[in-house]
Length: 406
Image (cartoon, rainbow, N blue to C red):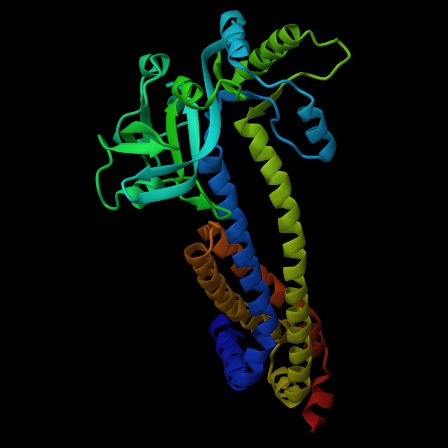
């Protein structure tokens, strides 16, 4: 049989029982739809983590008191460490030879006010001027403050878009004054919109000079130290080893004791995230695969029913010269077309669900052409596997017995 003839016969068989064909496809539709929706969410989160959530440059790391905590024991150990203070920062700056740039950040949460408008629980980040470059902060309007402004303890502020939208909707905030917990700061810049993740806004933030934050709300605050390693990404291990040695000496840490500080790199936090997302993906993929297995079983069952219903048709085809492989190809094609149709509908519904999640929840999503292709291939494979046994059974029918079948 020619390929065109095979397609025509297969299409007539499928379209002859539209409702049955649709019900047969529900398992495949639900399975592919779930896979597309789940993978789009995980891909979107991975992309967000890689590009926005942790925006350090690849050759920058931070020295922290806590760092990345993955267990209760690690948290308890971190609680025993001393806070990183300004004296530690100055000593590290003086002693570090494998650092091109050293910055610092402290933080607090305060209310921000302008006139009668007020925004509560705003993140106030006190940073050195070079943190803007080290953490890839982009300014949309105005500018970031300079290191001389930090040293002079200038009450200057660079605000996030959520702060601007709440205090001065649709207005240019540069040059205006905000009151942070009763202390006036002059706005000199507006950051590019970052969005939110897991419901946590990345734009509800105000950056001020670190020394101004210490002057306003006290010096006894933990400091995160930003370090740009000499030699780029390849120089990070040597720079971290140097930092480890410096802080062990500053803390007079015994040789057998754990490090008195922790280190966070862009790669480290992405590795932790990938391990979390991989576990979630494996679980959800397993749940989704159950629908595909059920769909494959339903397709195989319907194709076996179709073989019985069309026994006489098969006998006539064999009697007039059709080869067994033609019969196998015909039923395999029918099963594949059924599954592929279900896969196409599943991809469309998965894309719609992904768009709704992105629009109405804090979760970012990403539907790539690769994901769409993978969904269609998965459906096609399901149809091929489901159609093998019915196709083989149909091709093995004896022509004489098939012709006499009623």
